[in-house]
Image: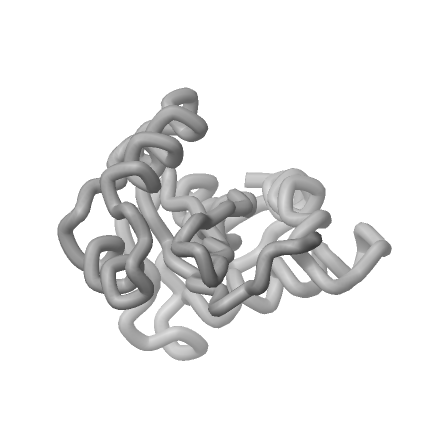
Length: 143
C-alpha cells in the first residue's frame, strides 16, 4: 500500500551545503521531518555540484518519512553564470548590463528541457530568452 502524502515542500538549496538553518530547518521541522537526515542525503547527492543553487521538491508522508527530487539549476542562475555577472539588472528593460549568445541560450534550454513545460527546443529557447530580457541581458548571435 502506498504511503499517504501530507505535503510537498519546494526549496532552493546550494549543492552540498544543506544545513539545519533557515530555510531548510523551519520548513522541514514544522512537518516533523528529520532535518539532519535530509541534509545528509541532500549533501551526498549533490557533492559533485557544490555551491550551485538547486531546486528540490521534498515529499513528506504521514509517517514523517520523506523523498526528494532534485531539479536542474534555475534559468536565471545559469544565465548569470553564462554572462559572468553577480546579479541581474536593477532596471531590466531600461538598463542592459550584459550579453549572452544564442549558443549559451540553446545550451541552457537543453539543460532545462526536463523542467520546462515544452517538448520543443525552440519554445524552450524563447522561455530562456524571456528570462534573459527580464534580467537586463541582451541575446546576441555571437559573444
